[in-house]
Length: 221
Image (cartoon, rainbow, N blue to C red; front, side):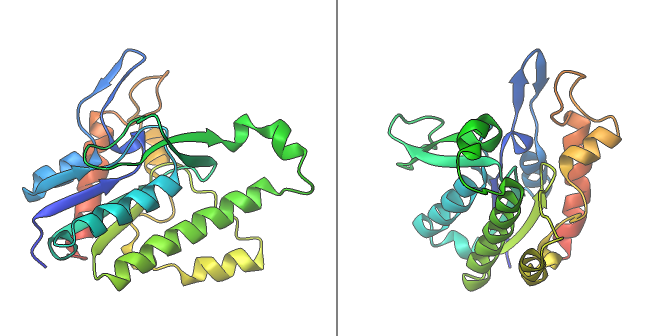
């Protein structure tokens, strides 16, 4: 495959950072695009969740059918506790696309969740993460789109349940980079966070993760 474009989706762990006195003008997707010398299509948005990642990724490729052949996708999964919904206010809207998104989080709605009979939030998070990964993997496979995935934040897959194990075993782990950990954990354990007040990756945190990810991508391209 001739790679001419790089499609990147995720949350604030795959974008620039300028908040709370911290500043970082690079990110994993940008580093990868620069390395390969290709055009970057940056769809990651801070604070958004995995539903938006799935939906906007499919919309991009279906609106740009020619890119199915010449584009490599990099998907950074975020927290399954983030629940995205489409809005009519254009919030963080991507230019050229009609749908905008906002997000609520399960940890913000514990009172409501507690009012629902026997809602097992941990199982809910795990099943959502597993099915969303499978969903996008199947889409990429059917459309013959090359891709790599990794966890930006700590995954919440719970394998003590047999049903969850069944879905976990169905994942294509060859297309995952560093499946056993996350970019967040890598930066925290190697002192590569922006500051003691901001746990997002520093410039080196992005560069080092991207360098390892590129080595994995070279085997998939």
